[in-house]
Image 1 (cartoon, rainbow, N blue to C red):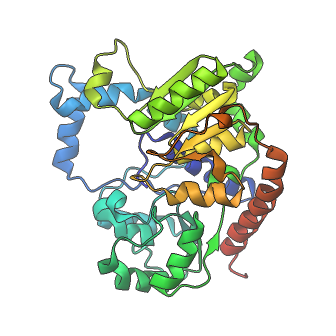
Image 2 (image 1 turned 60 degrees about the vertical axis):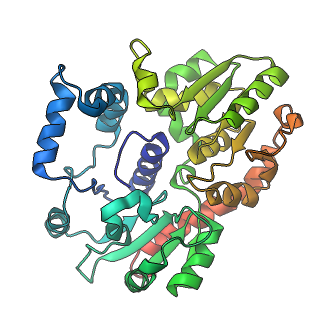
Length: 365
């Protein structure tokens, strides 16, 4: 998906890139953006940088995401220049003559998120028949296919793929039932492909300080239910809350003097420091598992519930998932997670996913 200020999106592409490089591959990230005319980009740049006129909060949003932009510039160096059109995208393909193009991960196959460039997510721009097409941990977002009017076109795209893997078990069934592709594999998110110690490089200062003792709450969508969960968590655990809420209207952040979005390394360190995590984010749930933290995940139906049920069901952690409108099980706040048992399931799944990806790249397989 277009690279923006989403923490999970940044770390999954970073982990995928470094996993591939660690296994001997040269990697470039195709920096596809949403369609924008040259004039609109010039106008947007003016509002971002002029300091006087802030049309639709464009300048404010640019300022508060600078810590994230700095992280991307430092760590995602294998980026093409921003690509705003299909013509430029095809020219970029010809210029680099890629052996393999991988699409994924995240909800790349949910057209509501991909907007007018949704066909690119099915690699419609890869014209060279010798270039291998692979989907790694792609997600439809929902358990049922939402766009039947696009089925025939996507079925044709799938016939051109050398290998397809999806992030949710429901995606495997969807590939077979909707797109006549019955060999899709269920794999881990890229953030799990790489050893936990990989993330230490980003949080080294926090490691030296030692762990904290609070509740880390990472929330994408403001709701009365998440507030109830948080109140109960603090009441049961009697420890402070570190809240990162990115789901409020932009006007709310403008009222906070000096506000800026957390840098990705600070966001990551919050999981390391936490004694407990409350989140409605899929990658928030993943990093709770990566850092072996007790957590509560709040099912986020609007953004895609299948991500949570598939992951937590596979790992035997469905009891950690809470639903708005249902009673809050307060016993979970003090219930430990048996991560030895979790990783007895997770480690073989990671191995399977790694082998699948590397073998898919190797044209002899």
